[in-house]
Picture 1 (cartoon, rainbow, N blue to C red):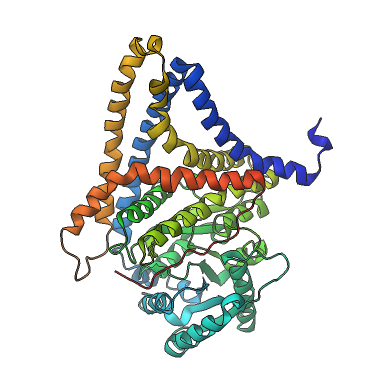
Picture 2 (cartoon, rainbow, N blue to C red):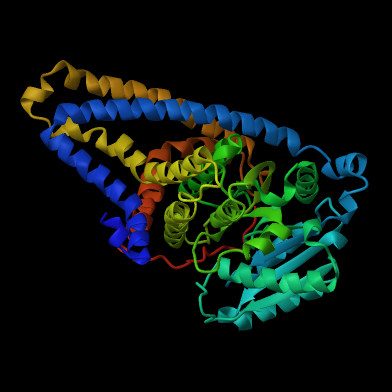
Length: 501
């Protein structure tokens, strides 16, 4: 076998090439098919659109399920439920919150801490780590000093850490910073003789403002879970901090991200950790903390658990939100560039595919169906991310455009535009539902924003096809092509404005 003669590095490179090769083979193949086998291409596009219409309707059902649970759970006083149902256990639970930061404005940091002290959970049970970078040490220490002066006595402990630059094996970014901060927090927890299995750790983006019931709700779910130490806990990621100030294109992108997560929360077998998430500190220590040499440490951590515990690990949905900033930073065009880079970084989660194939496929202790499902969800998700919008909105019309007169005269070619138009009209159900949800999940309208802005929040969904190509397919293809060519992506920090709606 040729594969047996290859080195480990060469085999790993093949795995890195596969996702991008599938994407480019599809796009190039469809163009060639449209030119040389036009009838086949028309059939393919119609079948593909029917498949995606079915998938959209399926997603809407799950989005509705998650949204209804979210509306119910966010209104519950979870601290009272803890006191009533877990009165002997909940008091022993501590929360460790890691907040990695790099060059974020002071206003963003202060807003996060101002929100944090309003949570409905005893602050004396909260350990907070504000984790800066040596690469921005002067600014960070100035900001951290201000934060410590105002908020340092509000929690059990506010730790300030500075992640050294140029540590061998570190990729500069959130993962390596969180890794360093987690180890520093471990030193404090050891000093306090706190048991690791009584600590829940949350790794948040520094602009993350959790719902006031977040930590009470998380504690309740944790204490009621039969395998609590071998699970990650994933909340609903919203981007409401500055949503009223953000341009329509950026609002659509971030709302779409939230709705995708809504859909997956209803199907925990598909769920990966994303952005801000929580887990047992005992598990984090056993896993060796977040991986420090990759871009997407947030999604990788649950896979580390899957590998380390031979499949005995899961991601538990939390139907309660955390709110972050959109990519808007005050300047329209800079924000567009910022948004593109953020989506490209998220799409670089395709680096999980070679990791999963390398570490899970040959592991006979992981149930075959479970590892196959996770690998398929990863590969199909990144593949569809890159190809589906182009196939639906552009490739769907290419065969008819390049068809010769003989093909154009066929019944299929003459009826294809009608069929595609009907399919697109049905797909509008998804857009209408997204418009409804986007308005229903908005924070209160700030002063100075007219009521007419609600109308723009609905009409913005007309931009959806353009968003899915510009901020969907293109950055996803960019990310997968970089991995395919070995031009690995470094961590690009999404710049955040201090504006809050």
